[in-house]
Length: 464
Image 1 (cartoon, rainbow, N blue to C red):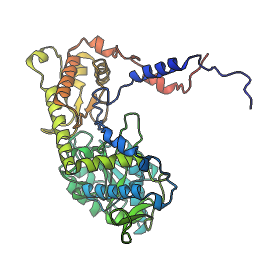
Image 2: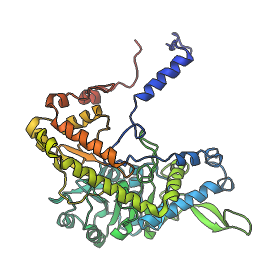
Image 3: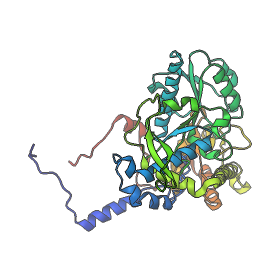
Image 4: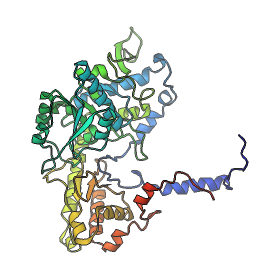
């Protein structure tokens, strides 16, 4: 079809276009421009070495339809990544195919479903989730055709074993748990919870969103989990500040391995004088595979970056988790314990989202006392932090904490950065409430009517 009206092409020179888009880029905020304490997202530094490796011709110029003989280098990396992820999580086999954490959840529940069906137990259609779970957990279970059974947390924010015992039974398919939980606290009774679910014939699924807190210290296998997903875009440094690309591989115990998506990489001894270090690699379909959950072989570049990160740090990844936990506890202490001079300026202080002497890699604060004293909400504080040059923490999640802010500093931030953020946070608490309620004031876009925007979608620009 021929256009009846000429398109409205911009009348601009090449230098003007370059300047325009360069100017737009300066208005972005990301991990490379400032502190990004977005809870449950692990916005850590992304090493540039990973980018150099993934751009090598042997990685960058291959095609997913190439024969195995042309993909041996990449397949060697895939095999090593499968083995490394299985080792650090206490699992037996790994697939790298899922490209997001939620897709990893979906894939794991599908494998568990097929396992139950192989035992003649198709009636197992209930998936148990705590009320502190990530929203993707019940969503993934529902997409698999399961019904979701939510159990309340105890008064301390941790798993309530009595509530769990009351819902397990012959219809239990699985339980989905994050440990540490979204409250940033470790579940001390997780082994007993696993025993309860297993005694009822169910399976245990580990949401790996918070794996950054325990890597090298313990693993899901020791806790009794049968399946786990890993967020390569969190724990293993794959960049995801722009919303992706992600990678959510899953690991499983041996009894679930036959149901993994196809294919996985297998290693075989190469004929003398050939192969990579004496090995050759092939694609292999698990015996009772659920099929493919993603085209090609997942997000290959994300896998290579994560592999480079893992190989670079090795056993020192344990220190990564130690520093992540140290930074979270230090920042929490700095915020909840202002100096006498600071305290004089603050009408009310936030409180812990969950009572705990020590948190893990992140922590939650309830701004309810602040709201009651001044009318300033958690949302207002989050917006005002933008004016101070910081990305807002995760807001109003988990929902069991009123006026919640979830803060995760990660291991890659310095003490100076944490001190400055704590000072800014306390400054906001002591500011004129009217200024805070109308924030942000210095960003390109001010306070947006989010309800109106959600109900009135504008998906394209109207030039007239």
